Amino acid sequence: MKTNDWFEYWLLRIKNRVKTQTYEKYAKTIRLYIKPFFGNSLLAQVDEKALLDLITELKENNLSASTINCVITILKSELYNAVEQGQIEKNPCDKLKRIYAQEFSSDAFTITEQRKIELYLATCKNTKLLGVKICLYLGLRIGELLALTWSDVDFNEKTITVSKTIDEKSNVYTPKTQAGIRKLPIPAILVTDLKTLRKTSTTYVIETDGHYTNPRVLRDSYYRMLKRLEVRKLKFHSLRHTFATRAIECGIDVKTLSSILGHASITITLNRYAHTQMEQKRKALNRLSRLNNGK
Image (cartoon, rainbow, N blue to C red; front, side):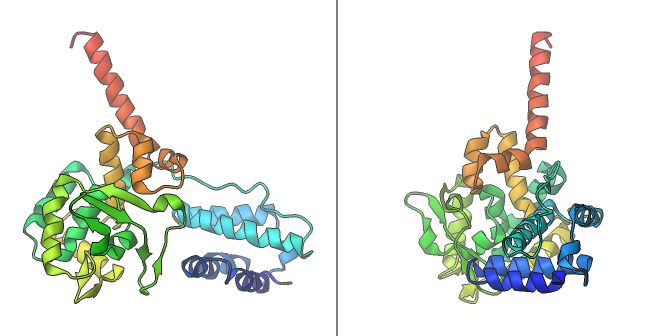
């Protein structure tokens, strides 16, 4: 059997076993990265060297760690099923390991950049952009932000419940893990902004004409803002990284940060923000050295 035929067969097998969002992600990953590499080769010809060559090529094309890990997840499952069904004798993915991004410092805005953004938001007439500030102080993903309704906001308890996410096709999903469902305290700095939004929207916190705001619309407004401010063009998701970086800088422990971010395990947080943690440790030890030296 040819690899491309097997990939299509595997997609059909999992279609009703995974969430629509996951299925679409897998189908896109196969179409963009896996099929073009293997072409019309036979499934039996896929060996460990070919897989390592694929991963090397993806790295050289500067794909993110999450995209490469998605490729690895798909290949492991596909080829495991191929062994089960007698298409190949051994899974060549056995020694293939997930990769980890070495550091995320460049994905976060500096304090100076963040202050510049917040000063702009204080006088900006586009109220939807207040979603940027919400992400800076709660670390929400864009889909989580745009899925928030006013029923998720409790002004009496001063909490926000994150329990769903929304995509560009208006599909609403629950988090992949239980940790993704979380209740967060509303920081004092956001209370006034949320009350301002409550006056202009009816159902969704970030609303467009009575409906939810498409992620693409908010991203476009966000990028226009960065261009106007002459601030580095970082992805919208960098607001989440910025939140995590500032949290570590302020001394928030990693377990608490992991819970706020909705990570499935503390290991994810540790791996993702190891560089920021090391910088904080370095500064702390340098302060201790100065204290002991009487400076």
